[in-house]
Amino acid sequence: MAIITLRGSSGGNRTGTGRRSRTERPIHDQDQRSPGQRSTKPRPPRDGQRPPRQRQGDGRPERSSGSFSKGRQRATPFLIKGELLYGRNAILETLRARRRNATRLWVAEALKPDERIDEIIELARMNEVLLETVPRQMLDDQEPGINHQGVLLETLAYPYADLADVIEAEGNVLILDHLQDPQNFGTLLRAADAAGVAGVVIPSDRSASVSPAVVNSSAGAVEHLSIALVANLGNAIEKLEASGRWIVGLDSGAGSQDLFSTDIPTPAALVVGSEGSGLTLNIRKRCQLVVSLPMLGRVESLNASTAGSITLFDLVRRSPS
Image: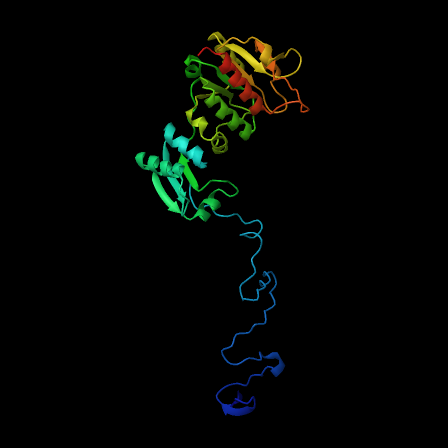
């Protein structure tokens, strides 16, 4: 008959029958706590396991500086089909223009009263756009690091115009020779709309395109412009010249004339080059006239959007009313 050892309440041993014996752990290896009380001593991690997180004085785990561990990407809450526009002015002008189909509008909860938000919501309902009111954190997660101003709009891609439509329209035309910075691009498009240009021509390669960032930087003005995307900028310039427009390049250097002391027939096609390098050699050769702004201060030049905006409005001044 087998003899077993049973543990008593006082830690002593007593004998019984029916089970094999087992060895008790020494008292110093056992947890010194009352029954039902959980141990506060952290267990050492096993091989390959992540060490336990340290806890604060209130018992909560300490949070890292970021919302997620390094290398882990935040999941976006919305599945987007098309483009996602942001910013109140950009979205308002997009809905006003009605040039591209908008499908869904997200508005952050508890926004302060704003006439633009009211009109955005009203236009969305008129155009049967699905409207959802969501926590602002969801918009932050969808567009991290973007100042969305509490609104996001899902739309189809920007509708580019045909070059023929730009040529047939009356007025000055803006041509961008491989302008690549979205901020400069959007700012110049905003000035082009304010100056009432007939249209804008941009190359399809090595150039900024109409993206949500450009729509936002233009304050939505791009939605009211006819922008032609062409494969060959030189051929487009030839067609604009054939329509009776003077081709005027904006650039410094040899052969450039002072804008304010030069006679420029209108309507004209103004060509603005890229940041830093200016007009490409091939495009500059096609210009009938090259002008520049007089720099009277210590800086040597202005950025493309500022110089282009000034020149556009000087062409407006010269145009017959």
